[in-house]
Amino acid sequence: MALPARRLPDNAPGDFYVDRTCIDCDACRRIAPATFEEGDGHSYVSRQPAGEAERRRALMALVACPTASIGTASRANASEGAAAFPEMIDENVSFCGFTAESSFGAWSYLIERPEGNVLVDSPRAAGPLLTALEARGGVATMFLTHRDDVADHEDFRRRFGCERVLHADDATARTRDVERLWDGVEPLRLADDLLAIPTPGHTRGHAVLLYRNRYLFTGDHLAWSRRRGRLVAFRDACWFSWTDQIRSMERLLDFSFEWILPGHGGWHRAASAQAMRDEVARCVAWMREIAAKAASR
Ligand code: SF4
Image (cartoon, rainbow, N blue to C red; front, side, top):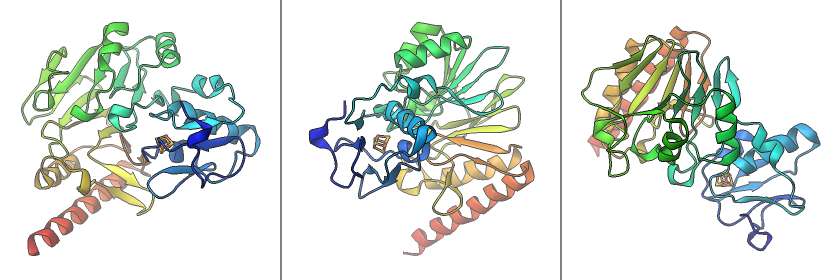
């Protein structure tokens, strides 16, 4: 719980504040950009929310924060923020909020479909979210993109009996007993509308999920950079192989999608599948440049 005694000095005066426990995950800045900004290794309240809409976004950031580092001097009731999740992004795809510290605040997503709902990566198993998911039909499948973003997967299995899917190369002591470990380098058809695509690089067993040839859930493989205004991969957070990650990125050129929805970094919707393909190709070229520079040193 955020504590006034730990309030960061750069917060704007007023009700909302960020305290010293912030891990700089970026979630609040994306959820409520009118209120939160990036400081030196942390977020802070740059401007107190003005009006109901901004206050609601700030409360959503408060409940989504993985470390409970956002507080209000008035001890405001945050139920309005909690009730906003899962928040629709597009059609039947939603952002779950309630990020987990063990995933460094990675974002997870809900796909609502008649054949069974899918969670992509594990959010925090917070009561309000579990209740909301129950009301929306529960969870049939939990697709885990990679080993880092598994958070509270056991709780979701217990509550909803979902089948957890993870590439075997990313199984750990905590996940080796998930219901579906798959392996190899070929895509895995999970359903007519769901395709798991191996994307080794960030980790050895990283995979992305393609839904309806429209939405690509990219975990820590590919994201949108607000600062650069284009697609990026995280060189500094590439734990397995940058060379493999470039190959995996090139492989995505064989697939059609308009959206990317990552664990970290921004999501992005391109004007068309071809426009997204061009963006991915640009990202591949940029990744190759980084590799070439490193090789020439
Ligand atoms: S969501 Fe929480 S941990 Fe993440 S940057 Fe904001 S205050 Fe810090």
